[in-house]
Amino acid sequence: MNIAQKTTFLRNHLGITSANFALRCGYSAPYLRQIETYKHIPDEEFLITVAKVFCISLDWLKDDTQGEAEFTSNNENVITPNQRVRMIRQETGLTLAEFAFKIGGDQATLSKIENGKNPLTLRMAKRIEKAYNVGSSWILYGEERNRYCPVGEEMIEYLKDHPDLRYEIRNRMDKEQTED
Image 1 (cartoon, rainbow, N blue to C red):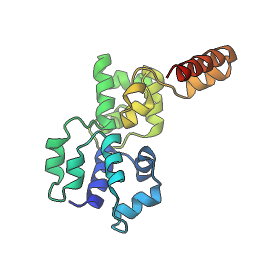
Image 2 (cartoon, rainbow, N blue to C red):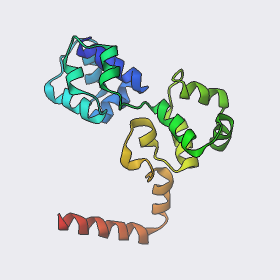
Image 3 (cartoon, rainbow, N blue to C red):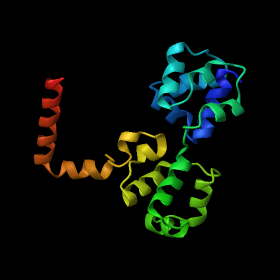
Image 4 (cartoon, rainbow, N blue to C red):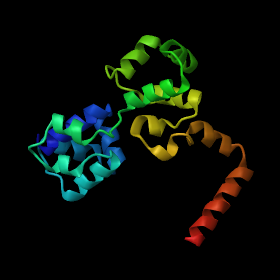
C-alpha cells in the first residue's frame, strides 16, 4: 500500500471523514484529497503528524510494502470510535437496550455502530457525552484528556452564565503561564 491508500484506509478504519481527518492533523481537506488521489506526495512532517495524532506506527506509514495486515499487528493500540462506544457501555455495565434508552437512541443503530457497520456521528457522540459525562472528542478522536472531563457545549453554556467562574479560571490560567 502506498501513502494515498494508507491514508484512506486509516480514515475508514477510524470511521472519520476526510474533513475530520485533515482537521485533526492541522491540514486542509483539499490537501488531504490531493494525497488520497495521488496528486500530491506528502512530506515527512505530514507523516509524523498523522502518526502522532492517531497513535500509529510511523514505520507503517512510510513502508510501501506494509498493508492492512501489518497495520493490525503494528497498531494494536488504535481504538476506533465504534470500539470506544462499546467500552463506555461495558464500563457502565449496561445492556445495549439500556444504553440506547439512556442516550435516547435506537438499539439497532447502536448495535451497528458498536460492530463497525455504521460510523459514529457527531450527534450520537454528543448524546453519549451528555448521558455519560465523557468527552465527545475522546469518543470520536481518542483525546484522552477529555475522556472523563468533557469540555463540551454544556460546560461552555454554563460558564457563559457564571462570569465569576470564568474569571477564576482565567486567573488560574494566567498564573500557570507565568510560572512556566
